[in-house]
Image (tube, rainbow, N blue to C red; front, side, top):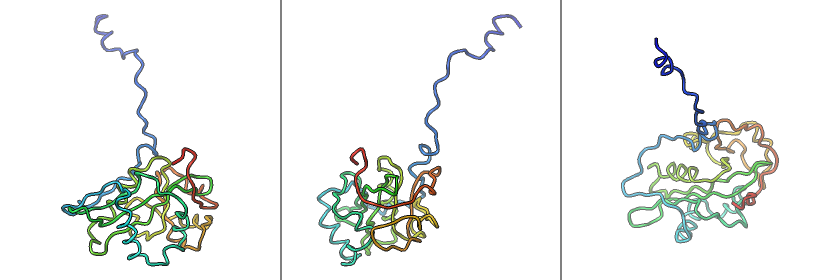
Length: 208
């Protein structure tokens, strides 16, 4: 083998480009979901002030007057909903079929988001609208990638949430809550054992 051929077989001495960010947090967020297609004519959009009245009417129908004394409602009380994070499901005529909102909170020392309420018009339940609202909303959240909700694990687990289990006993919420219904969505590498202390409302340091 001559010198020219040897040089061709040697690896290049040029530095390789740094690898892309493939850490578990970056690679596994948002959760990958397998959802059915939205019903024909239904679309998910960013929620705006124009949806407010219809959303409040739907909440009153579904949750009743007792909704204001629930722990999740107390975490929302007095806060202005961050713009651009909520999602609405609309039909062809622009009528509200469902909505979801997200609110800045702190879970002990960790900033995060509170999901809720998730609302779907009973006439359109079972069509996958709620799942698409959750997926669109969670996917659009800025960091921190930590979402808390109070809900049924059977419904939310396929949407990327997991029960806190015994760790939920270490959380202090502003009102009594069935802690078996405390669920979180976070990257797989997030240590749930770090979640403890008071859950409180309030903006994050960056103003979100």
